[in-house]
Amino acid sequence: MVSVINVADVDMKKVHITKPVIFNFYVVNIKRNCEGKIKYGQQYYDFDEGIMLFVAPKQRVELEESGSAKLQGWNAQYKQLQK
Image 1 (tube, rainbow, N blue to C red):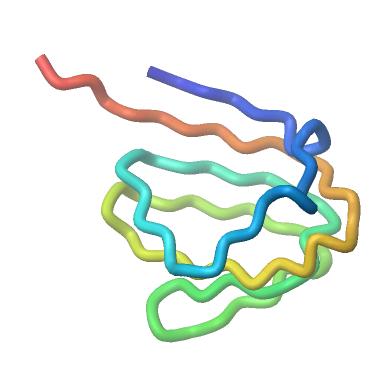
Image 2: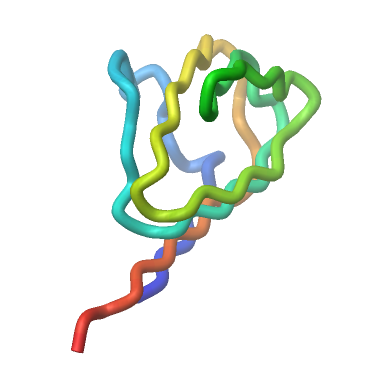
């Protein structure tokens, strides 16, 4: 199963993530105007200029986005279906 989201269509003012996220699927993010930081592992990464992020299932990610900028780009999610 594959989902593709145009992040410009998402109202980031309504998205408020306060806890770490663990995805159960693969995620590919390609974004611009991504203000804030992302914690992956033990380190924070700054993506103010833009982001190309790949996350595997069961990976822990923390988001610290300000939500002030209008994001541009795409988010693709892939989950392998069980037989």
